[in-house]
Amino acid sequence: MTTVDTPKVWTTLLTNTKYLSGLLALDFSLKSVGSRYPLVVLYTDSLEPEGHEALKLRNIPTKRIEYLLPSVHKDYGNDVRFYDCWSKMQPFSLVEYERVVQLDSDMIVRKNMDELMDLALDIEGDRAFAASHACVCNPLQKAHYPKDWTSSNCAYTSQSSTPKEALKTGASSTFGLGICNGGLQVVQPSQKLYDQIVKALNSPVATGNYDFADQSLLSDTFRGRWVPLSYVYNALKTMRSCHKEIWNDDEVKNVHYILSPKPWDNRESEDFTHKWWWECNDARVAKEKEAGISDGW
Image (cartoon, rainbow, N blue to C red):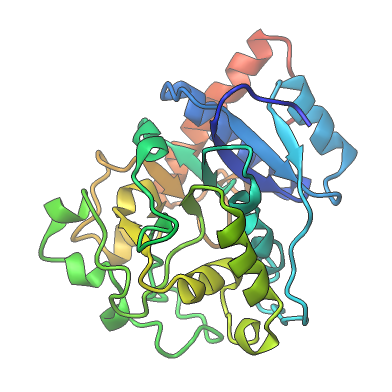
């Protein structure tokens, strides 16, 4: 573990090196927009030695966490990425910090969003944590997704006629399916909240119905008690097409490269937002080479 001398931090989960390139771009992007807070990598025992070496070489703070899983196995054969996602709720347990903003490693920050570190929360009331809505339009028409994942149930569809408002706030947390996206979570660590999460993890009746792991659990356990953020803090790349009425390239603060392929998998992707990732990553690699770091990541 590398200690950081600040009560507020960004965190991201790393269980293996598949997302390491994404994580390094994320860290670089946070520094590039002038964030005053460090990114702490929450790693599990499954992280390979070369992953540890790459983080150490770049002086990126790390902290070991336990790998979270439900007490009864939940099959995610159609989306194996969800096995890791339960562990993204560990920030709720990090009571050594006043504020943790958990980010997915397949994100890049395009504008400073340090204001999230001071967002008012109330763990006893209806502001237990903050997040942006999940987009439930299922634009890729994945057959194994729930049948109620339709545009008519999507919180972002409800904002189509108010694009300026969508830049400031999200729809009600109970609108439609009332599901948050777990990619960005603004958390005031609390043993009480974490105990509620663990209790849900140990309830097979509950977890058996959680098709989307962490975000399903959080949305169910804290239904109506989370703060809906604007999509600009967790701009799912698919929204640029399926919610073009509210999407604004110039206002996006944080891009989330959900689904496959990831930007680092294919430089020739025609996805417009992938160009942003490569611009960021190319700048990172160039700056690291100037500092004598050239390890292939």
